[in-house]
Length: 638
Image (cartoon, rainbow, N blue to C red; front, side):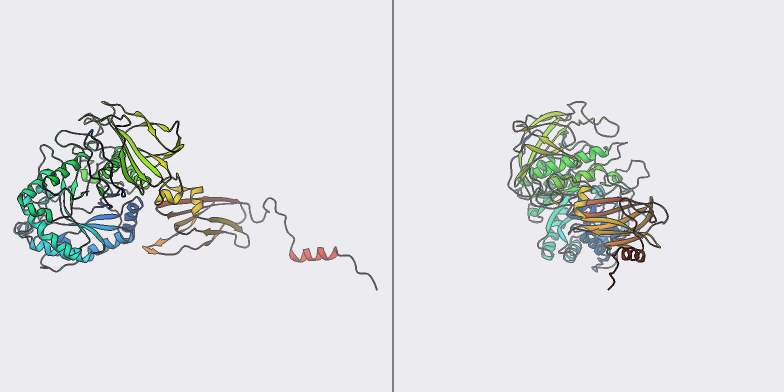
């Protein structure tokens, strides 16, 4: 997005080599993983390292594997330092990311007042920080007068974070000069900076991928900047040798205005056809072998103005993922981690793109992200069944296109199906949700090999559907469904929980399988108490144990305290009141292989002074001995 903020992405091998223009089919491809979903990390709410690591871990659990992170020139080289770098602040953030099991896709940007004559002059004025809310014209955004200083910084940064980074993106949305390359975008100047930087970064970190800075794609009327394909074409024209200065092309196919990803709009096309436009430019310049990476895309949920609803955001995420990886794009980056507070009441779109709300509660899109990555684990795209099933191709501006994209893994096929019923006049702000100009749902008869298949909703719900004469009958709409024909994946959350398991929270019998034993026992005496025993299976991380006695929370233990890990005991003793009945509830929360586990046990005990049902009151030890002794036969006299 048009913002100087951290971001997040996944990475994997490419799976296809052809696009999906409106109404066109998606060809079969070579084998390979589907690629991993991701999200920009803006507005991470955590304040401490432990909290930020936990936030990143939420993304990891949803399938994310790398963080797209700003490591800006001005962050690591203070003004006046003259080539002396301080990575301490970025070191802490990378450490948080690493602790969550993630890698880094670093953004190398932007300008620096010490290396730009205009930027230096702006830095001496009250407008040094730029014009809010987007810091337009900031002293740190003006490009350097010469590329050498930037290349020095890029090399030092790549060498410092080698091993943590999988890719380096040189600048961001440089085709939007009013924002990121003031005063105006300049393809020839960007060529010089990119070609000066590339060999330095590769020398410092040979295994990392160097990305052409993600270009803002849409060619929309009355908007400043140059469209992504036009800017890249101009860069090739200015310097044909630029093809040797990057390893992959990054782009940001935002659908301005915020229409459905499948909708073909004049001039701009669709989110999916953007890949065709970018590939066409690369192929026209003998550079068609380069992969495309989406390093930003998303929809804001300020639906009171021109955004979309949270439900539509989740549907668009799932639909974009299914098509993007079928097109052979190895990286799909969602913008963004979370929302920000917006005092304007919705005018600031940047505050509404998140997977999580401003209070850190999850939106439906976060569930859609985790569901897709779990259901499609270990798969590769195999076929587009849309036309063979008779689904409509859709129309420009009207929509109504049907999709049936089949992915495969050993022993199973997973088919994503949906009907994109949104037109250009729907699903934004107060407009209708869709279906006004095309059907809102369609019946589909899908051929399958199994007598029973599992059908997943895009938010993780599931059901079993029986086949009749080798087909299952479904009704599809704008919310994608995933039909699993065969065994579940051999890895990931679904495999961890067994065939047909849900990707959502694991409770009840599901959690009981992971937490082998949770038992309570009442111990009487002068100080009555309940003894709780907890046993865990391997791979289970218990995060907290909470004990409620007679409805009041009496004890709570956490695996982390003040940011430090602490072991949880396998046995707890909790005091209980005497002289009355006791109700005990124990709640154990944890994680296993990315799934949330919640196990609750309830017990009710009568007062210690009264015997439990079925138990005989025992006499004191001495009394029993006396009674038993008198029952012995008398001794015979001699």
